Length: 50
Image (cartoon, rainbow, N blue to C red; front, side, top):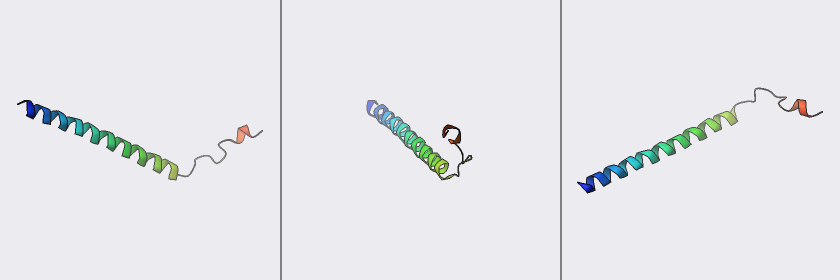
């Protein structure tokens, strides 16, 4: 019975790890899409150029 509980605990840990990797992959994809999108404002720093 302890072995089964141990396996279930490991399985839960694996699920958490998969979720974390999935979140990182989703974040990387969102950043990639954001970087690929054209900038909304071409003069983003114009006010600071003097």
